Amino acid sequence: MTWRDDALALVQPTPEEDETIQAAAKQLVTDIQHRLDEEGWSGTPRLEGSLAKGTYLHGNVDLDTFIAFPPNLERETLIQRTHKLKPLLTDAKLAYAEHPYVQGTYNGYDAEIVPCYAVETPKELKSSVDRTPFHTEHVKQHLTTEGKQDVRLLKAFLKAAGCYGAKEEIRGISGYLAELLILTHQTFEDTLEWATHGFHHPITFDHDPQRTFTDPLIVIAPVDPNRNAAAAVRTPALERFQEAAAAFRQAPHARYFTTPPDPTMNAEDALRTCNARNSRILTISFPAIGYDIDDPIHAQLRRAITLATEQLTRQQVPVYATHTHLEPRQPNRQGWILIEADHQALKEPLRHGGPPAHLEEHATAFRERWTNDPMAASTVQEDDDGRLYVDVHRDDDTLGAIVLPHLEQASAGKIIDTALQEGTLTLLEDAEAITEAPSLTLGGLLDRRRPWQRSTPETLKSPHSAK
Image 1: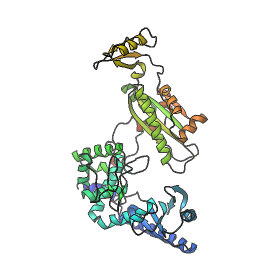
Image 2: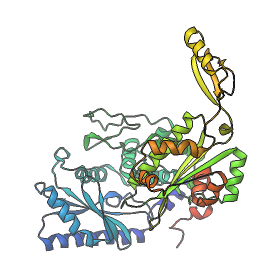
Image 3: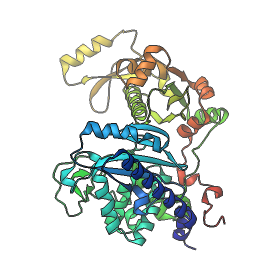
Image 4: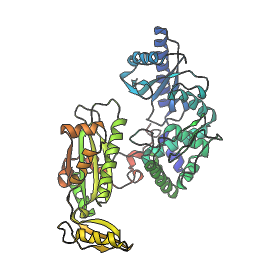
């Protein structure tokens, strides 16, 4: 068997699995129609997403159902009806995009009920989700049976590499975008070649874009030239995709299509790792409650990481790695920010830059300012570019002392600002941080192996061979 045969055996649903899922989806659509009839509402429920397009992965499918209401329905009425649809799902809750929709489970599957408007063309959109049925129809009309296999390979590959999904936690390539990439490049292999060589774009589907886009990747939606289907993608996800693609093309293997468990590391190994790297760890934890969905929390975690690393860089402390972690939902749920930074830099003075040496008046003033100053750790010197500088003693010699004041001054977001105000934000460093941090967060921060380097024989078991 080839790597492709092995990979397809891992990612394609079994016939029995597909039959069960299709039956559940059909029943959900029927239940929604019954509710519409009972309420006397005009609307058409239909299945959307990867299940409707035949591109979902083994063991990973959502029942995405849309209800197309008449275009003349008032927005407030649409919202009221969405609330009344909650009982159709188990553990239902309202999530919010442009307008609310229902999230929950149905017969054990994650499910969504999304209201939209039954517009005739994408030019008549009344809400952003109205374009979804047009996306679905375009993919169904143009994607071949072989193309569906390639989409599944690409989705599994991206998922394993950690760059699949448009949610705030990932900001990577969505399922719909993966389908568009296969429609563009025809095969999985050609898509990886495109990624390896730098993501040549924009991809326009013969459209003339109706606006200017500045995103890292531009793929014009074939049914809507005003929309970049890759708008959510950010550079780190593209870099992960490119690295994984290059590694795969050198040595293709099925391990690139399996998602191994997140790495863990115990405190003893973490201490040993930091000592070997001469690095130091800072952990920041806080209550992560008050939100029904996780995206706003992930956005604030990312904002806090950016503020912290920028301040450390300004203080000439090299940052080796960062990691964020959001615990599973529970009453005392915590959000975690972890930073690994250079330990030696904290012991060394800061280099304070001065004017060019040839500007005599400014150079003289700089020398006079720092001569005999107790904060000076060196005499005034000239660097290779002809600028003066002086080394000065640090005011702060711990990561926490550098980061915390900046977080207090520059808002990272409501949830972190509240923790700072209420005194529920915990900041730990070095051995104490390592001892208190969950092993999952330490592994995410310190384990440098890529996902395909962590695959095990267990992750490579095919559902088709388990019969």
